[in-house]
Length: 240
Image (cartoon, rainbow, N blue to C red; front, side, top):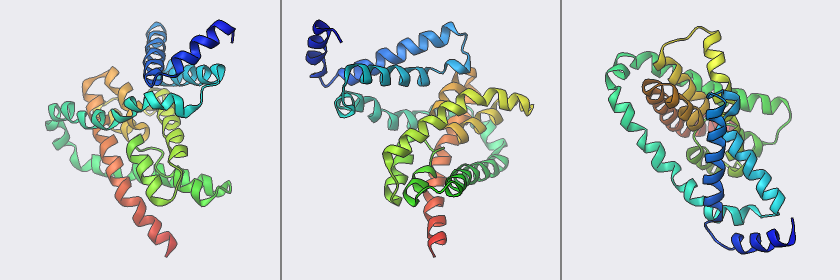
């Protein structure tokens, strides 16, 4: 960095709002690119903004804890944002009641496969127990996934990275995969995206339709709840 910019950055980095400002600016820029790309899944704004922030922190030599001092405000809003998804879900309550039984079956299958496949692949590749416990909740929304990993002896920071990566991949690949399988029902598409790609996939689903977003939000919440109860039980059976 040039001397003048370095002096300015030292002053700016002393503000706890640096992380918040950088996060909002990066996402706004990424979303602008996303719109210019005509909402192409490959230009996912979350992936782009993460890349921008990583580049910024690396270029300026800013430690992550300094960045997170401000970015924690965004992290805090993950919880309220998850609860707020109940609003569009209530608007589609009739559709939910009509499809309750198949959705419960899909939830159980999706939750078990998401955790089981991650742990199975990690085990085959020789991952440590700590890593396996961090892998298991990768398809659950970040606040719940980090809590599960911490309680079971995993690494919450590793889980957070895996959750974001899973969400980005799910948001990018979901449309093509569901089209290939000839699944056109918005409720079914949304539920599948919510189970597999949690919050990032749900945000993408809301951009397609309110119904798809509502069922993605439902799946995300229920998958988090089911995984929080189911995985500790499976772990006890495994250790028995």
